[in-house]
Image (cartoon, rainbow, N blue to C red; front, side, top):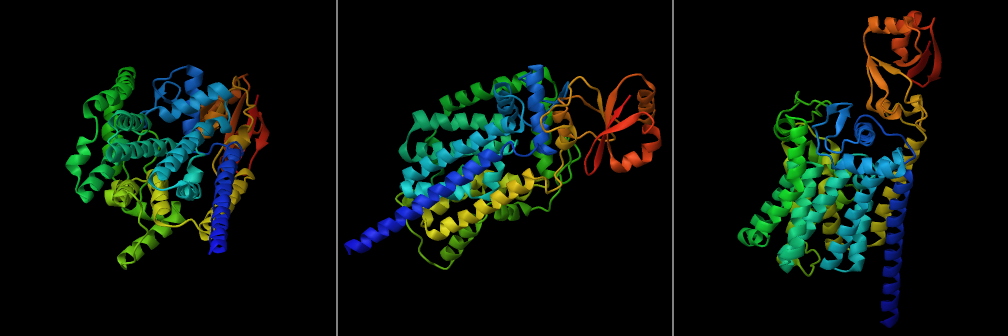
Length: 479
């Protein structure tokens, strides 16, 4: 019996060791990859350029879509953190992505600590393995987007609320909950508060503790903290650029989600998808663990008993389920969605699986598959084997394009052109203006698609030479 017990402990230790190794490998590879490929259009390059303009203009209140063009689509948090990184480490792909990666690490810490309080250290390691090997998570934390920071704020809010509810900790956890709400308002806006609200209302009604749940929070002092952290920027932003609040609240938070193909977007195109597509996105982005969740549901439906945990009587499984599916419920009826919108529920998924399943060799094999896929994806991107949109190759990965040289983009100017030219890229779509530039004595560059060059070749060839050529474009130097 003793030998069997020792062997079992050895096996468990080995499984935990390899789980920890896989976690560190996934995180390390993602960290190393941050600077291996350019910022891609449209999202990464757009947010990267806004952060670069923020540093250059020293305007830390209003993110700018272009010089003197305010960006009203999102609050400034993601721009702030990339801009701070630029000011500390210089302008590069790595420094643009680094703060979003740090937000992901903070989320990992919150998930690990939360799971440990609910169960034990091995379960906490299992939860980290699940989170870091979810492809949607490990990819998103290395991208210049709002979503990694939103996941961090959402996780902080839900962890703090549970501590406030279960341990009656109003002073610390209760007030940190409102800090997390304020952070969500500066990252994504009211949608962050709505996500958290959906989770808590559905859970408290399901658990039958709605009145008790409400009373657990320090509402008076908490709302004061929330307002002190959020109102100054919102008021100042409206004063600096009147019209911001109307567009951001009504347009971005009502019409964007309810009007399929919404035409009011000032900064891009609506992502028109069939309603309910968010559930399929979740299944793919949360894989392989989304399929484990489905397996647990099938077992429950068939009456198979699941492992109990010490907080089962307080409804932790119900809490985690509501936390996990809140983004899916919110965006089920949305007409304009992206796959990344499923990310806020990933922390709950990790804890839920860790509490209701055992860490086994199979768990490590699932994570190993994710590690291999992540490595392949990074190699493909870094070697340029896929045709992702970026002007980095044309203008120079090392940003060696002179900021004082006139640069024009014929017909269309991508966001990455602005970033890699240090804001010098200008849109040129008028043939008369092009002829005027060609007849002048000034030297300038013009970037043009190969098919467009064929049309204008007779006009450009006499005064322009090819400075650089990529698969689809030319960079011409004109005298």
